[in-house]
Image (cartoon, rainbow, N blue to C red; front, side):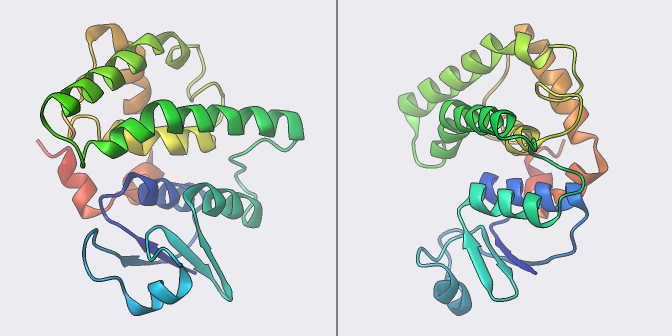
Amino acid sequence: MTLYSSPACVHSHRVRLVLAEKGIAVEIVDVEPGGRVPEDLADLNPYGEAPTLVDRDLALYDTRVISEYLDERFPHPPLMPVDPVSRAKARLVISRIERDWVNILDTLDRVSGDEAAQRRKALSESLAASDEVFGSGTPFFLSEELSMMDCVLGPMLWRLHHYGVELPDSAASVHAYAERLFEREAFQKSLSDVERAMRAV
């Protein structure tokens, strides 16, 4: 199994975290953003982008497709609920996390000045407004066990300081949740050298 992964990409990090949580052995091929696309990647993915997963004769792209495939192919520990109703609800939460938070973070490489400042402020305020959800009494996001929702949130939260998104004191539960995730052995294993440098003191 091979993963074409961008060392700084929040979406690639999400797939690496799923792999690490499941203890799946994989060869990582780094794809530098804006650099030359490896010839074999261009053949595997019509968009020539990371993340792209190759499992024998199967080539997958799209972060959500890859993540759910890994969860089904390697069912232990499960990261998505088994029953259809709970699974659909989890997918809806993941969709909201992506649209409300990850997508804002994802644009901060492409904007500057007042526009970037506005987006940082919007992301910080939105996370702080959700602090009660992060402090709902469960160790993970809306769950007693780590789930795919945490695999989406963790890489995004790891990058906040790097992108100048500072959470207010009112987001204490978000801070505590993030630190619990970051301390996990699998989370540490999922980090590229570039990502480790994002939070280097």
